[in-house]
Length: 253
Length: 319
Image (cartoon, rainbow over the protein chains, first blue to last red):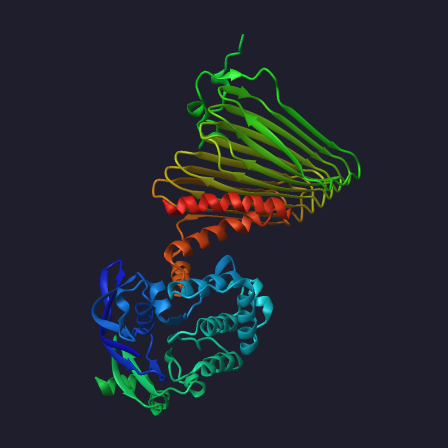
């Protein structure tokens, strides 16, 4: 499904380019959920932005393939059409654009890029209603501007809603759990679990082991200083929780 | 004999209020004073509620210097929605004065669509006086003219009155658009709002000067001011000067101005959701403008304005 091979990436700063990702290799077969854990500054968010194609990062080496297509040649919107979805750590507020216009434009842009027919207003309304009902999201959220005045929990639920509507092949969840109380966390995790399927894979980036109690990963990777230093089963997350990052990073070094 | 224009009596950038706008340099040459003065007088009697929108036009004529006058008097409890259109052909100077008097509990929805010709100069002074409980809700779309200057002077002298000045400036080429507002809060418990959004392309220059003057007796004043500008070109220029002058000690006044480019973050967010870069930019600038157009209460007029603004925005982003 997704193959990341020896990925190196720089970020532009005032002091010149700084290398953040120093050779990440990762293979996530279809149907699997992989988790990446790591301390602040390890490159977790950079990885998610690089995968999604944000301008501020420059890939200097390596490749990212989704079903055999090299994503690095694609613009962000082409990656989205190819089936990549990023749930943002900080979902962006867009004043003046209401949720339903946003969802409609988003879905139809992707359908158009894929050569599919655009959904008409009625079909769109039905789709929005059914997905909202599934995720326990109230209809009046649809009348509000995208993420404007949303609580932390609402923002993250909104990300999961968009993911449910766009049905990506590969979803990256960037610290979707950060700052959520346990009820909001459960709603978000439920939404993700409902979407697990043999032809979809997930990369769950998190700082805390807690999320992995609700979204059971197949593989856990530990990221430090821009490299994956250790990989293992779900028990690795528990070990991290137990010992802390410092020990594991120390062992690997 | 056509009357000659006394250019030496015009305000120059040496006058503080005119520091950003050089009128003399922009006036077309060889102007002739219009021989028929254009005057429109609208008077609504006590309690008259006008269901119909009134639509008036001030048309500029090539090579003419005209001095249109508009006077609107709404007596107690009267209400009106007025659309004022500014257009014309060729080079001309329209020097307009508007007087508005709102009686107690009167309500005026005033929409100004400024679409003067590309060579035109429009200078426009509007004086508004509101009595108690009166509401003035103004919206101004400024996109025409080589140089336009809108000066608004509001005197709130009856309690619980509310005045709102909302505006969208869409300027390109070498257009110059100046909005200068002075609001005098003279009595307690009144509200004033200023909400302007400006888009500047090419070498266009925008000016926004907004001043709220809260007199000592005007306690519980609620004054709000926001002026945001998006620059679509590196050669465009915006001058903003928000001012608060407050002598009362129990008021709520805020002001904010921003000038910049489209943020990268929402652009990337929208592109991650499948929108092309062009689509994402258009959606964001439309939203930026729509938030002000939303202040227009009449649905048909709002739709007309959005059609105009959306077409301007599509053109601006295509180039």
